[in-house]
Length: 273
Image (tube, rainbow, N blue to C red; front, side, top):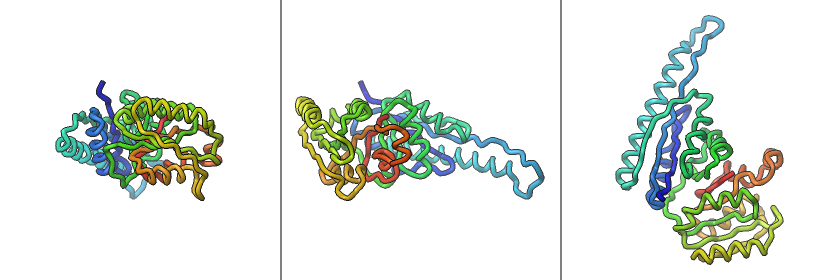
């Protein structure tokens, strides 16, 4: 069955990047997937100032909505151009949502598709986390300046957690087209069951993948930094990691691998909560 990728595009207060569009099209082309694009237009609530003001609040509101619609149109045309040149099957829609509920709407729509493709940026941060937690689907997260598409080698941040297992299920379509997997364990971040890791490596080899196991200390980096360094050294095209495998309280206090990936991502990563 052909995979269906979702590309949600932000239009307010800043727009999603053309780089995100180009990479989403490239990933869809290499994975032979449909690409479903939704440009989310923000509806700005009317504000009634309690006293007269020299600021024309209604004009500011109308201008903001007009800008959001214009960006949606511009982004949609860019998708058509890229997808047409890449011969990728694409559907494009513009969806309205109250400005305060755009992130909720994106997460809701994302449940329809096999995975969503988003980028790391201050503007997208809230929507990215909402999709990861609320969509129930995998998230393909891209650095803002990445160039991606073809995936031959996948790096797997293997810690044996349930969230890692869910991420692997979501990554199956990428694993099916890959030739090599690198299993990365940061040994001073979490206790690793080496026997289970070896058993998992054997299942990947049985599926036709060449497998390399890398067990390492933190190398003077955070766990997330170490994982990305090893993945880069292995020339991985995609990092697969669980999303917030520890308790939310621990993540909020100590940070954690996923939160570090949000703030400092160097390569495409597939996450699933």
